[in-house]
Image 1 (cartoon, rainbow, N blue to C red):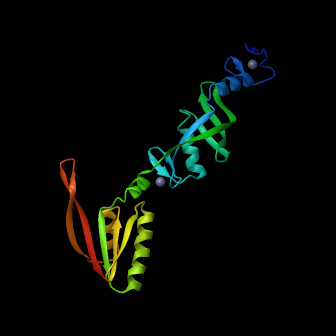
Image 2 (image 1 turned 120 degrees about the vertical axis):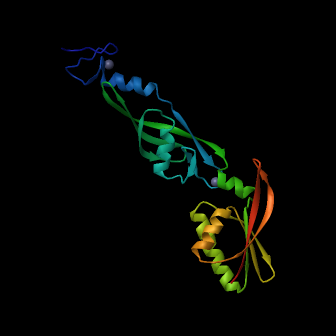
Image 3 (image 1 turned 180 degrees about the vertical axis):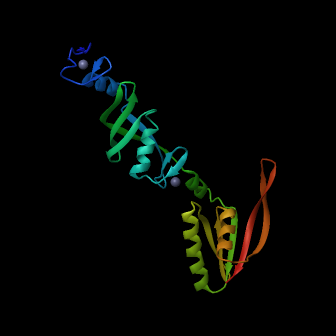
Length: 211
Ligand SMILES: [Zn+2]
Ligand SMILES: [Zn+2]
């Protein structure tokens, strides 16, 4: 039976229909309901963006996920993007089939500090590694340590030159311990009470190592 679109009177003999409406009107209605701007939460220091509560590198795949968060129940394919704009293919499954439209959305950025940059900004540290010995070996180890920490999203918050070596302040004692184990080092440990958090005593670890 031929159907006529109630909006534009097009006939189902000529164009595709989604339920009672023609394709064109369905897509127009679908487009009208879509927002034109998506807010992306971005760290003002490192540029990473937040997707599902976690800060990740701002590549196409992650940006696509971040945009998707702004369009509940819809599927997104990122076609192209720039700083302030993204061309996307939006689709949604309906009882009458999948509707998809190509759209350009404006990207606005909410500036924040990610967890890592926030800690960096306040010189946060849980561990100190005291490296003593040959400057050459000390420097090589600092490079390895820096690389290891960065790979695991932690960081060195401060380096101090002292007699015969360096004191390295590190954001995570858990990761510092893991690094020592990986390198098969057996540092001399000491612990300083740093405060009380949620009724539990919190200690800062010091790892003394002679190279
Ligand atoms: Zn129509
Ligand atoms: Zn950051």
